[in-house]
Image (tube, rainbow, N blue to C red; front, side):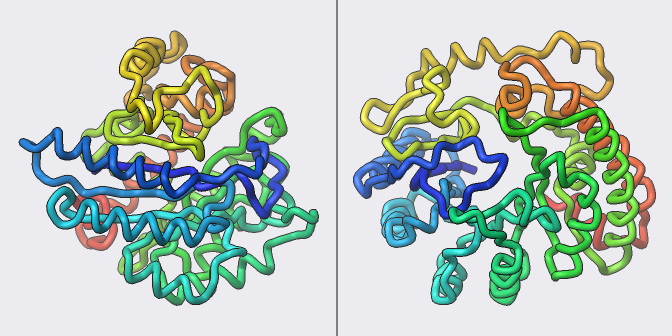
Length: 366
């Protein structure tokens, strides 16, 4: 699959306590967005001997729905440019905090195969995710979630866990499940505004152990609940995939374009000149890309670890976010990954039964 991410704006209507962005009032132009789609089309044409790829274009921010009209223009342009000759299928994705999501946008999203992912921190929402005026947002975003689920039962939750709210993790995931959500992704908050103590880390493992028990119960029989940290570990093991196979490849089949048309490996590195890898005017800087790839080496502390083929120790953005280096894994990330693998395997042993067909089909799907 070819993936293109467009950063529509750095501005946001939220002021999350852990956010590392500067909330600058800058926005992507129509010309830049269309040019990025053109470059994607050119790349596919150069690979004319390969089968037509599936293409995903994601809209990112800030809050991307501040640029709703441009998003619609880009979708129309991309569909016209890529379908049916260059792409087998077009998918779109928007990660939003929800408060700018209009009712009339939902049928539009369904028509154009837009996957809507909602940023929501569960029971910690009002602590971590406040609006520009410093007001809580959970009650309002909960109402948005209900509307989203009515149109999109497969709405994905993107949850960020602040250390001050770690004790509510398991109940937050239960809250989502009880609300009708069947897929939650989890990211540990990092950056200068966040400090994980030893006590927070111990509580995190305790909460994950509780979640593992919930996960087993929620995936028996015809029931289904995808908790991405567990799902990914189990599925990658079954399919024989290294956890790094689908992430952290500078360029490759993924490209992130900032508001001004500059290329970066992923959202964590936006604006960091050290990780600038090209622009829409000149194309990718292959020398810089290759240089960054050479710098991205296995951390010395991981070389003899039995978990290394199943953890994210080579994820440049996770490492850089926690330690300031692409090649140094934080103790938090290391212990988290080890325990996620351990708990996912324990859950799999209980769920991988011949009569538990729903779970088996999900893990073995193409």
